[in-house]
Length: 171
Image 1: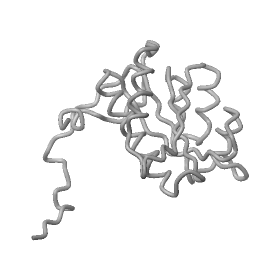
Image 2: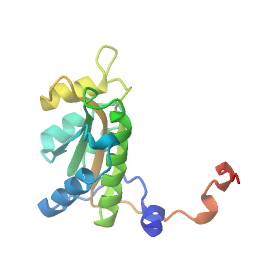
Image 3: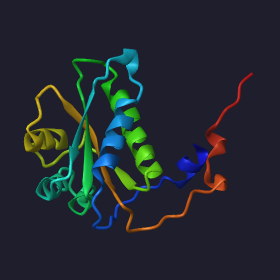
Image 4: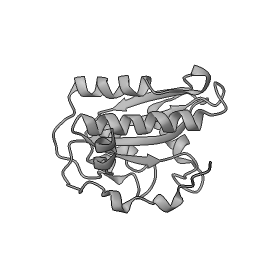
């Protein structure tokens, strides 16, 4: 597990190779295995592989989502606030599990934060994605995970980079 954590880096450039259906299914399965508060499962996942939809998603958060236009896969992580008051935490846990599963499958990924972000001055990024994907109003979008075969290489993190000074030990 530590090796997986040291090697997982945000990847924003992808090759043209499509992500195989079996790998997409494994990523969704991993997300569905993520723990949730009181087992409410207040999250929903939308796997997007359509090039036109990916291009449209790439402008959901101006600048920061642009890598989606060249990604072969995006997983939208949505939460239902009517199901749980900690849907944000549940979605966040699922999102990082998707990223770790992607790393384990030889894929790169990048978290694109949408909750609390704006598409433009009138419309939130979450509202834009809900309209685009025709999602129900009760859902809120936490993030989008871009996924694909890496077209960039980043070194593993080194233990010396870790902020051990932020850890307190108490008896």
